[in-house]
Image (cartoon, rainbow, N blue to C red; front, side):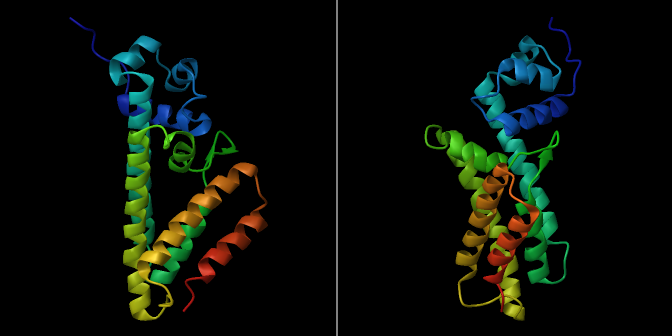
Length: 194
C-alpha cells in the first residue's frame, strides 16, 4: 500500500508555478522544481506527472488566479473608467518574485512555447479571450455612461488594452524606469478618454 502524501499539493503546485514563472519551461530544471517545491523528484512525478504536465497545471493555476484577480479588480469601483484605469495600472506594473520583476507568466509562456505546444497556445488564447470579455463588459458600461470614448468598439478597445498590458509586462523584464512605465500606461489609457 502506498504511503499517504505528507505535503500540501496546492502549495507545491503554487511553488512550481513560481519556479516556471521565473525561469520559463525550458530553463526550469527538475532540481529547480525540487528546491522550489520542497519535494523529491519521485514525489513530484507521483503527484503531478511529468514536467510538462506539471507546467500545464501551473499555467492553469496562474490563469485561474489571474482571471479571478482581474474580475475582482474591475468590480471594485463604481466608475467604469476608474476600474479600467486602476486595473491597467496594477497589471502593467507587474509582479515581483524574490525581488525580481517576472513579467506575465502567460505572456512568457506564449513567447516560449505557443508556436510548438498547442496546449500552451490554448491556455494563452483562453486567458486572452476571458480578459477581453471582462474589459468589454466594463468598457461598454463606461461608453453607456459617457466615461469611455465611443470612437472605437468595446471589442477593439478591450483587445488594445489586453495587448498593451501584455506588451508592458514583457517590457518590464528590461527593468524600465517607473516614469517610463507610467508614461506608457497614460498613453494606453488616453485612448479611452471620452
